[in-house]
Image 1 (tube, one colour):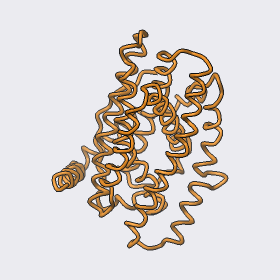
Image 2: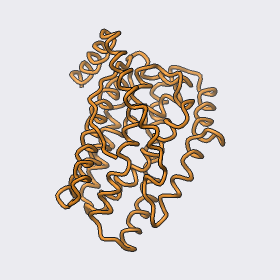
Image 3: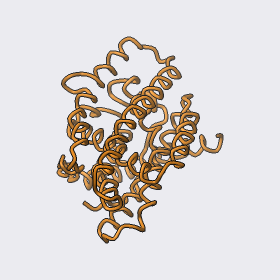
Length: 295
């Protein structure tokens, strides 16, 4: 699977940044918390893979690495602008981004193999969460179109490149028990820290946005969204998470590449929406630039 860099821009209404999800602001802020992870996280991913780029002999994998880096760079740009809208809405987006950047920078002092293991684990998380969005449209359907398109685009590209860091891992590190233990041990550590950070960011966004009210009903919705036995996020990723611990695991063991047939129609829909309402796209981009200029 060859990742393709797609330079897309999205019209994200600034006034809906805190409640763009059809299930309300509490679920919206779960996604917003994830968005706050991406700029610092994806820069870390790109650098951890770059560390091994020169040791890759397979020409196909070399091209896949370039595609991976290109896609992650586009995701970083769009989530920086998305997060600027959260800042302009009175949420502590920039503060939380700086905190995460500092945290990940401490891990750049660790061995490069551990940094790549972190990327492999976190890329599996992004692939699992992307799969949930793509394979069950009810998780995000009915949301504000620009945000819906952006999250769908991100999910599709995370699926498209979900095996690249893992293939670099297999190509660069010597097979054997130590490689397996480093991969799985890192996943256990990443799982604990990842969800602690997401929970922390989510709660801080909810507190900052508490003026919207409706907290009892909103909390029930987000608990059901995350933990519901039929459609909850955590039950939905449980088996995929466990499969990561198989000695012979590979990301494409869960072959959902059929979802990628949606990419061309999504790209066309984004271009059509931007052409039909260029003022909305321009206003969205102007709002984001204004936040960065004031920061």
